[in-house]
Length: 63
Image 1 (tube, rainbow, N blue to C red):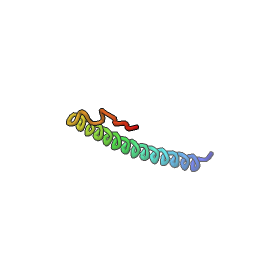
Image 2: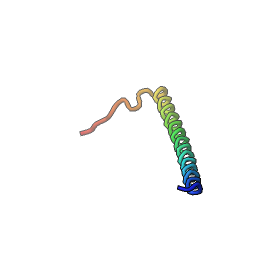
Image 3: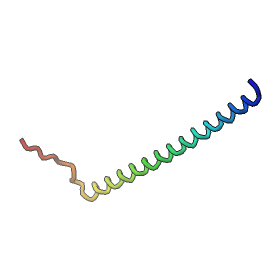
Image 4: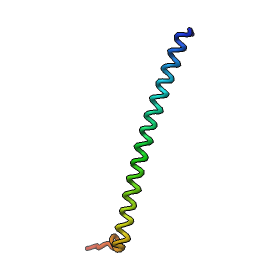
């Protein structure tokens, strides 16, 4: 393989690595936002249970 071809292959490899790293970073940011939203939702649910502890404790079944 000549020097020019090797240089071109290495440059393409670096570009793909940089792109993949950026996409992974964006994906991790999205997961962090989703996780923070889920934690917030669970905290609000726990707050509702502390205010109204009997909600969801009984099921009415009619036959």
